[in-house]
Image: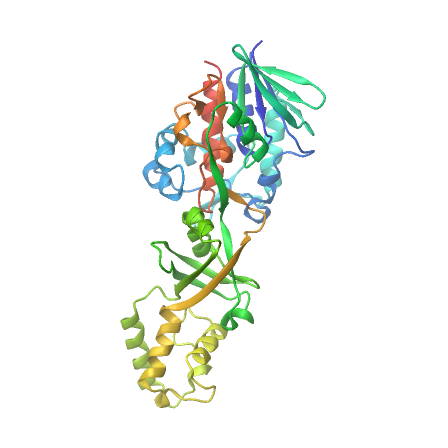
Length: 402
């Protein structure tokens, strides 16, 4: 009986193991997990609700959410796509729901539902799981792979590396001749110390445009003020696309925020209209824009050098222009990053040029496979990183029976 060993008991590893065992009943399937628990990233994802995929059903559109891996994933997504993921779970009695932003969650709103599904499916398919089994070395012996741990050795006909961002395993793969693209953080929030936002954590705007000054980096999306600076989908998107560039800047740079995603002239004209219509009212009392919450508006008014008692009629052209700049060209100094909750994602890993994406197999070693974040593939938030794991796991599961 041939043996398929998966190193890493995460999303990609489990998905590959379950599908391989179901597709090839004559295959012995074993997962080796270094920790004493499996599927830990699945557990914390989506705030503990598990954002399993995204309701984007066209491969050409889906690949646009991957800063690294866009070109390579197009073919694989034609084999196993977001709709296939949803069908896979629903066939196992896990009803899913699509939220307004296209993220897909289990109806239970609990990641434990997904974990239980995997554990039960693995058990039913005969997949064996060994916990607290850290791999110390991987060697090639003729056509087979020898996996050594502290206590025992395993021999595999097919080997899948699904260890995520694991520098030790990356080093082992370098010994196999693979190139490792230097890992850097992706999906992080910006540390900003600025009196305009210091006292108003929790304030959000629905659609801001964020640019990194002296760079081509730009992103748009909801923005959230936090205790340490700025977060929200707009910032996370920018951090994903700018992962390498922002690392090279030492996470020290300036951003320009257009809180309204509207051009300067339009905003100025609206303010002039408000000045005329609400001449006797104090500027600070009420936001002129429904998308700008009152407490944030107050900070912009004060930053524009408008006093708390000034009325609209009293504003000079310079004060109006200052207010427009706060709303559309608001400059912040970023000094460092913070990890976005527990959903840490890394850009970097196995060089994609060395992978055959029809099988997610090494071009250097037959029957050596990779899936998930161990590869230099990452995406923005919204279920896309998991979809990469499911697609890779599915294709590997089909390939190992050949």
